[in-house]
Amino acid sequence: MYNQLKETWFSNVRGDVLAGIVVALALIPEAIAFSIIAGVDPKVGLYASFCIAVVIAFVGGRPGMISAATGAMALLMITLVKSHGLQYLLAATLLCGVLQILAGYLQLGSLMRFVSRSVVTGFVNALAILIFMAQLPELTDVSWHVYAMTAAGLGIIYLFPFLPVIGKVIPSPLVCILTLTAFALVLGLDIRTVGDMGQLPDTLPIFLWPEVPLTFETLQIILPYSAALAVVGLLESMMTATIVDEMTDTPSDKNRECKGQGIANIGAGLLGGMAGCAMIGQSVINVKSGGRTRLSTLTAGVVLLIMCLFLSEWVSKIPMAALVAVMIMVSIGTFSWDSVLNLRKHPMSSSIVMLVTVTFVVVTHNLAYGVFAGVLLASLFFANKISHFMYVEASLESASQTRRYKVVGQVFFSSADKFSASFDFKEDISQVQIDLKRAHFWDITSVAALDKVVLKFRREGKSVEVIGLNEASATIVDRFGVHDKPETIDRVVGH
Image (cartoon, rainbow, N blue to C red; front, side, top):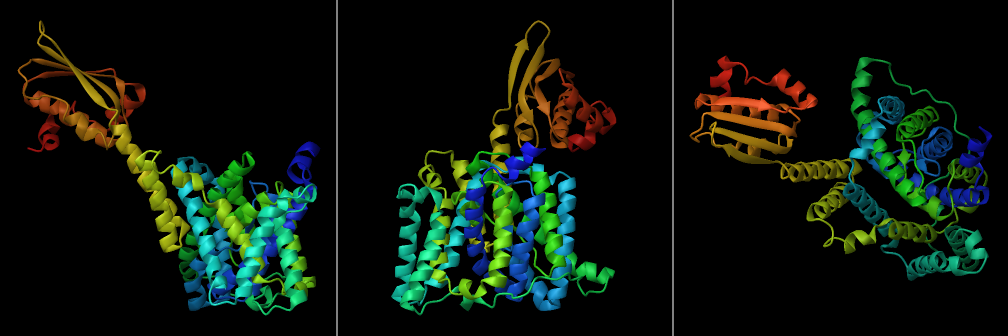
């Protein structure tokens, strides 16, 4: 117990604390921005980010991953807030949490194994593009000072780690933020700061039960939003967990993460916060800054609250250019540059899946659409590829006038037509033997194809013997097959 506690909390204290501070600084403007997108007070996003980060540190399944208020979730709240107000948003947040906990108990986190590498790569690249695009408003119609500060920030981020000793001890994004803030204050530069994004909270969050009627009508209003928030939140969290798994070369418990996200959102809703999920940008900042354990996530949440309550005067003076530099670094580091180089090397189907995922996410700004499109396309390509491995070998035994067909491969909806077309129903023979020892029948489409083949042969006056069905195939054929029922011949054949 002690060793496990030390491993998940205190095996990397210095790196986790410093990384958590960097993440907290970067969370403030994002939480405010996401609150504005959703149409609520900045406090709603900041309280949510604090609560979710702290709670997920204890109950999440992926140590070192950062969860808070996110843009993907904020986009889904706009209509609800406009139509019904903040209280209904808080109620939807609570229901979202319940649905996510239910998803965890239903083991839906395990479905991540069905998401192909191409979809994950497309998801990552799309998020990198969206993170970069989100910085463009801060770089549009501004003075040259902003460009100079941003360039200087990038220089610090990428060059500081080369300094001996100190470059390995202090995260360069933290150095970037502190240095540019001090520089802007000393020179009195008139550039946009965190304080210009919105007012920081000056009180602790308090327990709030949503002031909505507990009626079926209320459930009808919030359920569609809660379901959408739950799905998008879990998708982004599961994908981010997979990416952090690869970055740190450590495993995570996806089903526990589902439950953890649900508990964190319930906590956020009860403290007046909006629903949130894992943040790939902040998670990458955390990992690249040295964060590895749950302590980094907890530090980010606690430091965020401390800075908002006690250091708001100083935090509000941080130039947005410094945070833009950090987020551009995240965008560059997140994007899979190898995927561009491998477009011509990898199979065309994989490249198409990756590009479609990127396109859907970037165009719709909805991660769920991109992932669903990628998974669907990858499934279709896979089904098509597997169908090509099904073939039928034919041999003739002249003495007994028996044609033997040996079926090899997977017979399912995609290969059923190919299976049916492999037989010669007009051949002048008396007996047909269909050997299925090396075949497997997966669905009712394949069973229907077998029925049609057998019944067509019998209609032509031939004796048909089906042999070699494995146990699983025999079960589905016995249950749904009709070729052993002569009265169904006309219906199956189509006469």
